[in-house]
Image 1: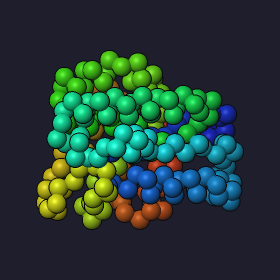
Image 2: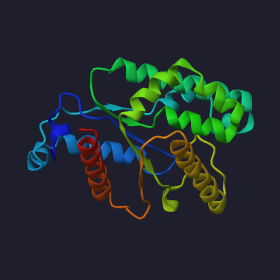
Image 3: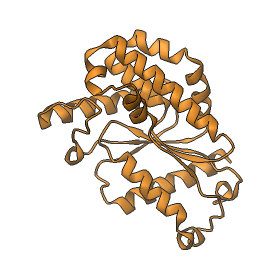
Image 4: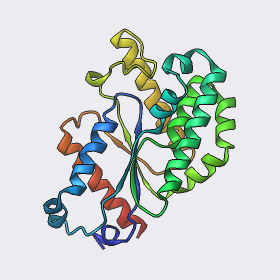
Length: 221
């Protein structure tokens, strides 16, 4: 049934994830406005309650611990510590709203992928063995995962995450991270959809996500 999931008390959650500077936070802000637009929802026969918007926890963790992307890129032990804290913060944030459906700016997968990039396989094993990840994984497997493909024109230094100075190095880094996202999700058997980087207009990006959300809900029944 086309809109069955949209009428459910708690529709499927949506995770917007991917490498830095790929438009995730901007997209989520637009999705929030979309679900606040009653005329838009009525035109698509939606009666679902508005989603809770789960903001990025990684930024808060880095700020709370006086850390930046430089710490992550230069110290494996510090990188592992921070990714573990980010996993725990993500779990706490999701657990606090477990009775609501939500759209999340990033996910536990982000911590795993950045752990792999900056710590290595030993770090990934430790992160995957945490209680926080075991809980987060359950939610992820029952949710729509959108991986935003990096957009070269949007690459910038945000003061928190490590970003090379040259544009070519930046492009290479975020492309590498994007590939690690897709590799991990595929290997671990997660269902996910890539939001392509040739889809730049914000309204089109919103409707892409909504369309995938509807299809995902129909598939799961």
